[in-house]
Length: 185
Length: 426
Image 1 (cartoon, each protein chain N blue to C red):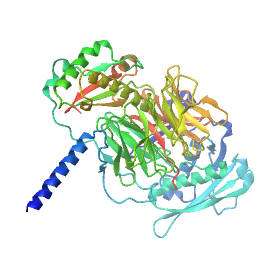
Image 2: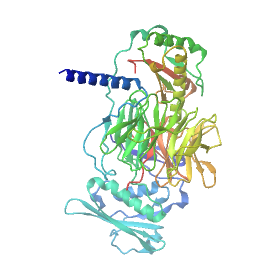
Image 3: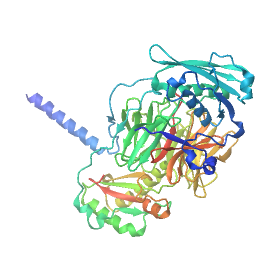
Image 4: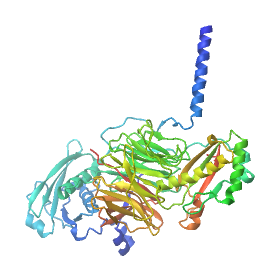
C-alpha cells in the first residue's frame, strides 16, 4: 500500500512537471490535430476522384474579455502607420503606455498584437511587413514593463482590411496594428 | 459548391469586342497567324455523351494559344478512326492536322472512345488511342485526348489533364477550390470565414499546403485532397506562412516569426524536424525550390527594398538575383529551371516579369495594374496569375513568351485569387 502510494505520488509529480514543462515552452508547436471527414483514400485516383470538402466556418468563440480593457484609454487599440513605415508615431505613445501599465499590473493578462498592411504588393511579403509592425508594438510594450510571455505578435498581412476601398484613404486605415486581450481572439 | 468558369476573351479582344459576346466566347487572341489550324471532326456517335468530347478537345487546344480549330461543314458519312483519309481534301480545307474518332457504347454500359491524329501537310498518321470510360469521365477523357494531340504536334507535354487550386472570396467566406486546368469541375477543399492564402501543391499532386487564418493568426496546414484530412504543419508562436515543397516532397520551407522577424525555416511536412535556414535582420519570405532541389529562391528586403535572392537549399550565402526596380517579389522558377517569373512594381503597377537565366534578359510580360502570385504550368508554357479587373479579383493566364493572354472569373461572382497550377499526374 505504502509502495503504491509512493509510486502514485511519483507519477503525479512527474505528470505535474511534464505539464509545467509543456506550458512554459511557449515556443513549441501546438499538437497537430487531424481534422476533416474520415474515410479511406483512393490512391492513384486523384484526377477523377472528388475533393472531400472541409468546413471550418462554424468555429466556436472564446470566453469573455476582462471588462476593464473595454474602457478609457485601454479601449484604444489601433496604431496607424505611414506608407512603408513601422515606427510608432508619438501620438500613440500614451496609449501604448496605458496598455503596458495594464499588462504590468495584471501579470495573468495576455495580449495578441495583429500587424496589418494595405493591399498593395505581395500577400506573403505583406505578412512580413505586418509582423514587423506588430513586433515593434510588442517591443515598446516590453520596454515599458510588460512581460515578453504576455504578448504574442502576429501578422494578418493585407488579409483583414478595416476599410475596403482601393485608395489612400482606405489604405491609411489598413496600415495598422491592433491590440487584442484574452477573450477577444 | 460547384460553379462554371467563363473563359473570357484575351485582353486585346476584350477591349475591342462587345462584352455580350465575351460570356460565350472561347476565342483566344495573340497567337495570331502562328496558330496551327486543326480540324477536329465531331466523333461518330459522340452525341451519346455529354458534354461533347470534341468541343472540349478543341477548347483545350485553342486555350493553349498554339492551335485554331477549323469550322467544318457537316461531313456525310462522318469519317472515323477507321476511315481512309483523303489528305488533299483536308488540305483544301486549310487543315494542317486532323483528328477523327468514334464513340461506341459497350455491353457493360460504359463507352469506348477511339481517335486518330493525322499530319495533313506530311500526309502521315501520327497515332491514336482507345479509352474506356463511364459517363462521368467525359471531361477527363477529352483532356487526355487533347494532351495526346498537343504532345504529338508540339513535342511538349500537354497540361489539359492537370488541376489548379485558387481561393474564392465571396463576402466574408473564403473557399480553397480545386478545378480542372480549364476551370471546369470546381470543388471546394476548404471553406472558412477567415482568409486562406498561399496554396502550394505537393509534387505528387495529392496534398496542398496553405496558410489559414482561422485561428486569428497565420498557421500552415497540409491538406490531403482525396480524403479531406489535414494537419497543422506549423503553428508556432507568431506568424507561420509561405509554405513551399521541395521537389522530392520530403521538406517544407516555411516563413516563421518564432525567433523574431520573418525568417525561412525547413521542416518535415508532418511538422517535425524544424531547422532555421536564413539568418538576417530583414524579412526573408516566399521561399521556392529550384526544380533540381539545389537552390532556394526567396524574397528579402535585406538590401533596403524587397528583392529576390537565392541560396543553396542546404544553407549558405545568399546572392541577389533581381536588380532593376525597387520592388521585386514572389519568385517562381520555371519547371526546366531556366526562367524566373516574379512580380515587379513599375510606377505603382504590379506586373509579371520574366528573367531568362540563359541570357540574363528580363521582360515584363503583362500590362495590368495589380498582378500577384504567378504560377507556371507544369510544362512551363503558360503562367497563371491573379489580377484585378474592374475592381474584381480574377485569374489570368499568359503564355511564357507574353504573346497571348486570357482571363477567367467566377461566373457566380466573388474575388478569385492565389492561383497555384498543380503538377503532372502520373
